[in-house]
Length: 390
Image (cartoon, rainbow, N blue to C red):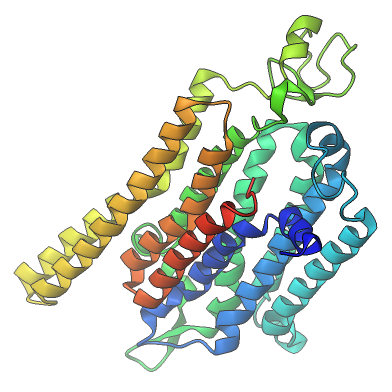
């Protein structure tokens, strides 16, 4: 591989890109489960996914641009502080990709300005929110550990941008000949809990936030790097200051010298580890409910066939066991050596399309989308062996 190409792949954490592709596809193709009622054009399936990938690549370029002073101390071998990639060229590339992705969403969802009085271009609005959140996270994430919620928010917005971009084009026919927008059905009770993607989006928001908080402990080897307040984890720029500028905690010079990683209290660590298991627990609960309802329809109403039910539950169980095993292995790697975070963090990142495969199969039984998500998982694992994803 050409060294220039590798520099850009490392800068953009390109090995993680399949996880974003799968998330965008899940957000767009969730409606494929209703394909007998409505259909999407190729453009509505492809454009949001490509635009999200552009946002992702641009986001990590800006992340390294904003962090180049910190990286010069903690990670001097990164492409920008090491001089392998010029900061000005990186800025131009990131800006171009952001604008290009926004234009793609605008062309698909907001180009017809005359219809804005009838319907808001929700996909375009969501894309603007996502761009703002990406830039805010890149700019301010080093100031407080609470900004890991911004990372989780970016992942949640990936699903929402795709859903809101295509939902205006999908309708359910009613008996009286009228049509109801599919999103309106999902926002009603109890569909919003049982059949909509929104609880899953919330679970993934917490999942990404949880392992992102753990990932804040990944620093340069040998304990070299920035220093943090031992009470709140806030970055201490001036090691001679007596109090933390964030929480006011008294800083001890000897303690400060050792706090080269943001500290995690035991309760917070356990909470974050529980958060990494939250999506699989939600999907197991949902699948159990759907299985019980399927049995009810067979026994009480004579609908569906037992073969279909057992095929569905067999597929869910096989995927579920695989996802659960992967997540438990990641937790085990972390507990075995909390100071070597690269392996568990990369496992949690790669676990995103694995969890999404279980989600999309549980809701739509779509072999195509499930297969693509599983492919994204394997490609991510393969890519991590060549270009670090952290």
